[in-house]
Image (cartoon, rainbow, N blue to C red):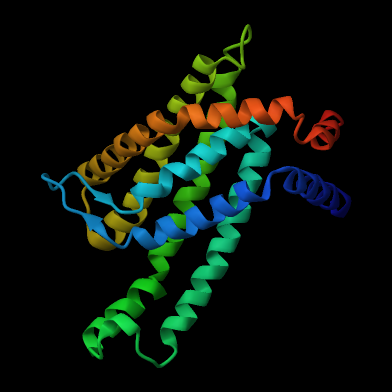
Length: 244
């Protein structure tokens, strides 16, 4: 058991060093930022529709996971997602502790009401963090392995743009819906009494919005995958995986 754990850790270390640091940094930053931006809702015309400002950047997370899955495989992408979740939790704890420290935020203008509101926004709420963490973890697994599975269909030309686009678009649609529905159910329904229709409506609305972003930037992810393949990025990692 210990030997297997050490092997897995070494394998992740090799993958982690092979992956460009900018990709890891962007993923961690996006995961943390989208949870913070999710505190601000976007006004929608119907009660069953729900969007928050986290949608503006959450598509980046799925674009990164899809790109990493295409080149390194679903296992590596899922491990990277778990790494991002751990760092996100650490920083959320730091922000929570900072919110407990007596003091005044610069933008509060001396108002206790505004100061308390800012503290609560940055400090977060435990069930929101728990719900978002569970939702992201489940959706990451669903997205990464569905992406990989769909990619297996294109055996003749797996590296063509249409193959990349379809596997990314379909897996993102599934992953995003699972993410948003899980969060809506765990937080919205359990703590705020949302109906199932509201949970489904919220999940569908956010999924559609984020698929539009994916449509605009899918070609960028495709170019990165092609570049990584031409550079033989992660060659040592793939050699390790051959022996599994």
